[in-house]
Amino acid sequence: MRLFALNASIGLGQRIAEQLGCPLDPHEEREFSYGEHKVRPLVSVWAHDVYVISSLHGDRDLSVNDKICRLLFFVGAMKDAGARSVTAVLPVLAYSRKDQKTKPSDPVTTRYLATILQSVGVDRVITMDVHNPAALDNSFRCPAVNLETTELFADHYYQTVGNSVDSIVAPDLGGIKATRLFVDTYEQLSGNTLSMAVMDKRRSEGLVSGSGMIGTVGDHVLIVDDMIGSGTTLCRAVQACLDAGASRISVAATHGLFQEGAPQLFAQSGIDTITVTDTVAVADLPLLDEHRARVTIIETAPLFADALREMQVEH
Picture 1: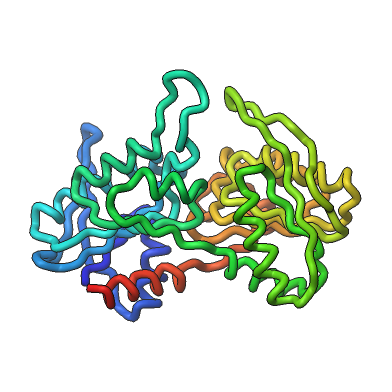
Picture 2: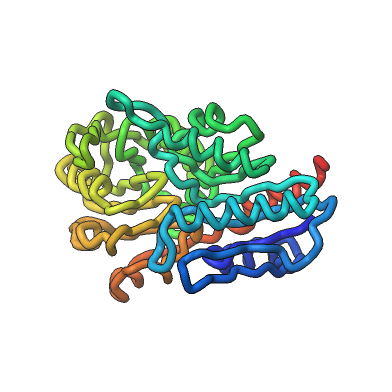
């Protein structure tokens, strides 16, 4: 087994390696003055099962496309060097929200990205809380594993706030299934019956509309989403919960991108806590210090390490 983490994901990679009880293997990422680069392993990968960790989201140093390009070149180099298999561990899967046509001649970018990854030799993909699990299965022809953080978040909130949570809210209709699973998991932990509600959200031309709430909102609401981008969607959900009578609101999202600092989200009244995972290095994002201090981060390394162990057993 060879385990690599590209530089932009080195922190999470090191935590996964620690969980596995093995070091990250060395590699080189070299930049050239004319804007090109190269990536190569510094150990032999001949006849090895290789795992490459790279979270495909933009940050202050590299764009989404920069990271995709580095990953593609690295996978290709390892296949050329005789790797038996290459598994791409992608905590954040880029373009996962563009998984279907919504307008004439729309691209289905999730499928295009899958095709590109497979073309350079990716044999398996591991990601986490992808926006649409069905689209993930339909886009990839190689095995694609979607890890879920439901138990991770449910355990975190039960340990911190206990039985005070009485409602779980999905910020859009696409999150109903995941939210229903969260409700079931939290009820098993707490022994209480929770209500569930969902926002009726519509997005077009980059604009979000719709503020209707379907379901019952209690006093302490937990809003669960897969990603925080600009924070617009969550702000609408928070306000709708406040209008419905909630007095305490917690926000949980797997991937905290906080685009451009998400100032609207941190200015929104009524939010008690904001919790995300470490799939995105919050330290690398353009957040104000006082905003960064409001974000709680929970680790995903144990989930990724367990998945890698299971794959090694299969081999």
